[in-house]
Length: 58
Image (cartoon, rainbow, N blue to C red):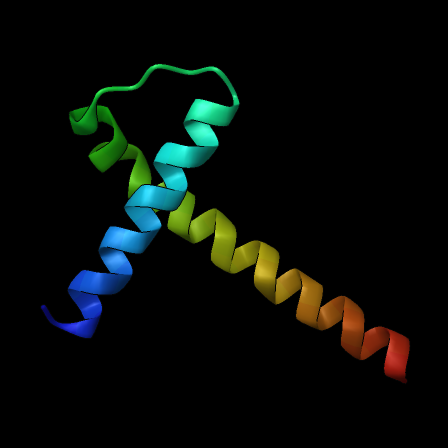
């Protein structure tokens, strides 16, 4: 399995875990449609955390 496929699978599992923790029953088809948005939000949150950390070190 390629690294990209492994990353996609781990992101899919993370999304499924988060949805389960929120008590949301979502089909795999809907998870597949939600995944790109979830990844975009996670990337944005990580970038925001880095920017905030940079601000604190200035």
